[in-house]
Length: 255
Image (cartoon, rainbow, N blue to C red; front, side, top):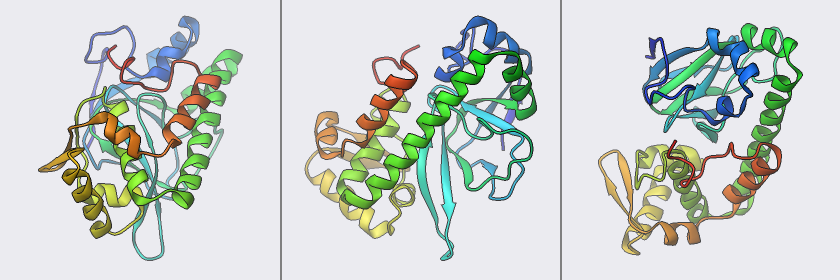
């Protein structure tokens, strides 16, 4: 359950710690600032179910993460992409009624900022540059989805496991402790928990990582990166072409 709070972000910055919001010009940010609501989210909080009316845009801040999950006929949810402080979920470019196609949940809890879709739409009508930033972000989000589809088709479970852990590390400021369980990794990979456990055991034997209760401790970042596919880099490169400085990196994740 999200807990609403008002005022500035917890880090005291002039803007919430969300790179997309910080990318806006001062005049564009001023159009939406009065309508932003700050809240604390918890892991597994539900933002949208399929078919829900998407009325709110949610901006993860700092180390917070949201995830898109696609329900399947066998009852399992398959995770498609993670969204952190580089973006937002829900109603990015929509106008009018928009039913959610996927389930969207909070992956890692922490600060979020929310904005009603109608308020965002009204601001877009006043500013072509604001419309442009969100349209560009929608393009980057689509690139993530395309890359995830290709990744699932051609890369091994080992490569994809390393990729997801690296991707999570980038969004939590390079922290070596990643709050991912075997079950959550299995959902990200779209495989059974036993497959994920075998990969984790292999990485542990190689000294790449250790497991703790409810989390993973990365012991050798470089070894983990070597084992990962290059999908994160492809997405990052597209972000840099379209929205330079928005995609999170460990070096930039200190602000």
